[in-house]
Length: 374
Image 1: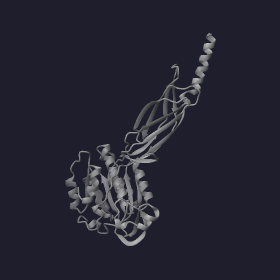
Image 2: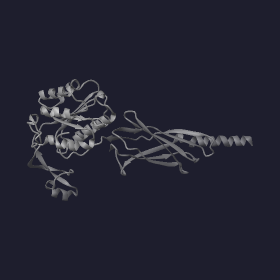
Image 3: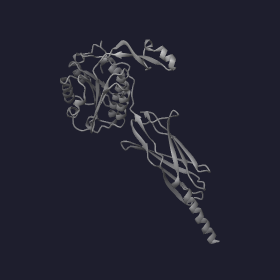
Image 4: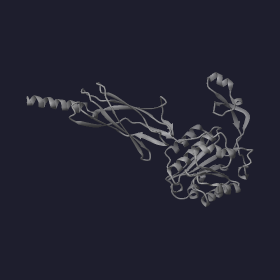
């Protein structure tokens, strides 16, 4: 009798070992609004569906699943849930991530924990179900920027070359409708033919390129939120300048300088936005020496827009340096969460004929640059 019981127990343990969660396999599906995707925007959530198959003959009463979502900077979030597998060893876990901020994310190996149906042994296993995605920076729609208005009273001698890109009357083709296009711009024939809104594409006058410079020097930022605001401002400016296919480039001054030459291509704009996804404030040193090493990649006569939380002599030195080289500099001052006043700094820049703005919240950006002062 004892031998029979021992033999039965051995057979049971062998079956449990063969059927345990250590041999589990799975597949992960990431969705947003019921569609497959590879990126989303800051503040949005991810729908995660994990399908698990546990091979073997013996059913398991439950499985505890531990998920870990890791960000590119090392931050991570844990999710734990228990599920009841079917008699065929199939289980499904569905959950939502919290609202995510800008960055690259990936799921590390999933930990599965269970016990056999008699409660004799605990079992652990790792399930490899890869899943990675990007979260794009938060942006705001900018309908109008007074600095690029030819008729603006704020236009000074620095913008004498050309301060807006006027369209000619020569139609250059058809493009997709962009929110804000006037009714007179709608291309009705193309709209009727394709079934989607289309707008007329006109040739544009030639204007100087635009270079946006993002200050990513660590000591200049008082908090992570302040740097996130700077990145979001840059992303919003990139979208604004790209709507009319105006050449725009990006220079980031972090641990390594990164320069993307101005281009009218939407593909290049996406490249710039993807570069901002995992950008950190990890630079050292001061603005001008870092920028001087990349000057050869700046086009002559370009608009030069500095997005930075710093002010004073270091910024004025950079502005004078850019002005001497024929560029048209301006400064978009990024304030901290308290919104410390920078009226004096903006006034100093205005007195020198330089465009200056101050932003403490992303929602204020369209108003600040639309009316031309902070």
